[in-house]
Length: 496
Ligand code: SAH
Image (cartoon, rainbow, N blue to C red; front, side, top):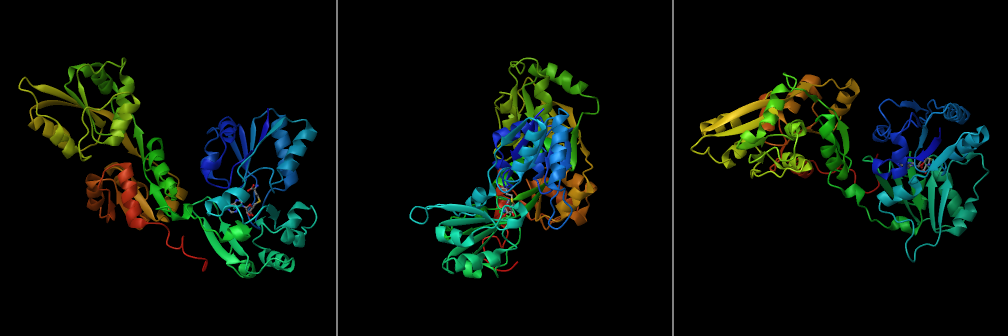
């Protein structure tokens, strides 16, 4: 019905507006640029058509006229169309031409503003566009005048205005621009900050002066800031603990986001390579359903994974179904999954492994007692055997099975090129070996705990990081300590 001209922001998916996310979520067609962030495209329904319309540097791109025709055709045919554009759709982006074509054709459209790179990229580099006492104007100017056909920029006028000058699309013409600004009267010593791939893990800031701009090693796409504010350095993003590193997450999609989010927060790029899938138990769930129906007859129910919680809790008919049965969780992640269902674990051991859970559970009462352990089809016997040795009657029921997944070869290749890989269970280790093989391991291997590490070592994998606290937070903290940020990241302007 409507064509939405949506600003995607400069790269960090968190910088999409809520309105943008809303219209993406119900798009039937997404027309996007080649460099659009994959996780934003994932916000559209799986069945939505995705059309890439360029633009590769010097490569093929769809001419603007054709894009306009496409938008008019799809919108006119009654489809919900999202035209996703980098930054803001009305800032050096030809969104105005698209809107004019839609208006002329009588097709309804809406403009969803985005955070322009002109503002967001300097912010992520720690350069405030205005600073008290330093400037009273900000001029945003394109370095690629011909692309807009709108006449020439009066560079001497820009120079006279002074203040902060933000140049988009100016990498190729940076020498010319610097000359023009100096000819216009700007001091050759005026600070310059050029920020490439801003707001992304690839972000790189080169600091120079107007005199040095022409010869500085700067590649596209970059935002170039000229002016006194470019001499300020309030860097924060590039100082994050895993900034610029690429880390592989091997968990299945349903649980990957918790780990991905933590890594991204520390500035890492993440390759999600799901090597296992969670499937139904062999019996289709009959055993689990029966156990759930009789849950009140147990003294304890011991959960050793969030997956088991997610499979078991929905089978309970009534919030009071546990009766007097107590609930144990192997670690905080499992306890958090229980808490989502408003069940507060009675016991979480001090160390998050089966051995510790076993130690902390009380021995069976003299009258005898029963423990239910809903868990994966393949799992270690430490807990049930240990409980039996302590006098408990133990029912182990299969809550789910893990299967090896079959991710696309492109993801396996991306994983092999990463800086580090994370394993959060033994099944992710064996899954990875089946899917990708040992040769595809990145240089640093990080495991969540001793059981996962042991599985890795048994398969000849050297474990570089083992989380002392066996949680996602513990894993990420331990990895950050060993790996640290990308080495060149905070180094001053130089090589490339
Ligand atoms: N509509 C966009 C601008 C498109 S023009 C916006 O509002 O941001 C393309 C130019 O934007 C690039 O040449 C570069 O100068 C700048 N740019 C966009 N995203 C960028 C990023 N993540 N890092 C650095 N520069 C970026």
